[in-house]
Length: 299
Image (cartoon, rainbow, N blue to C red; front, side, top):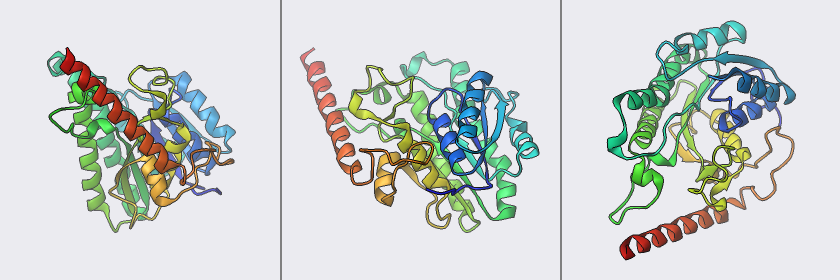
């Protein structure tokens, strides 16, 4: 693939658990970026940085708690720029949520979810914007979720995001909305601002084996990382203001999918393969929902 991010500095939050954030950090490192990995767990961050270094780059570990206003978000960008240089790319990947009924959420829990999913991402974007505007270059990528979509009905879907996604889904809907607003505000300034979700589910350690997700829903972390790369290294005049899904984006752009080291094409997940995968996922979702609706009526 080459070194599309050579010399750039990227900040990736939520990069400590071997999931989407870690995969993006490794992929960006393979493309030459110096990557600042940020999260609450130092040991996990050190593992992520080791992957960046093994991919041929460098970076730094930054322990922050984005659920607290005093958890380090105010100084994170300044610390990264002191250590690594001006921030060219910000990936807001940290997320907090869960699915449960509307009336079971306490205000304390809701505020904590908002701090991570919205306010910390918003504030970090505010911190990097002045430098990006001065350099007339930069990228902000917010990792979102299909939970932001409005459940259509009645009859309504029987999925967890539809039936118990009031808190998490609403924060991701807000994230999507301000992503597009910021893209509008910065259009023509050399800055691209986008939001990216897994098509259905990314194959993270925390989700694989979860009864909510059949195997057909899972995509490899390589596809999420490749889509993230496309959204931060594309033409800022054209690829901005996108609220998109990984497989659909890669198919649209006809973009080859490489592994996290950027060395090998990922078999079975190339652009020509993706429409059929998405169609199969959609068909399975429709089948499961029809089955659940039938069970509910019978009950």
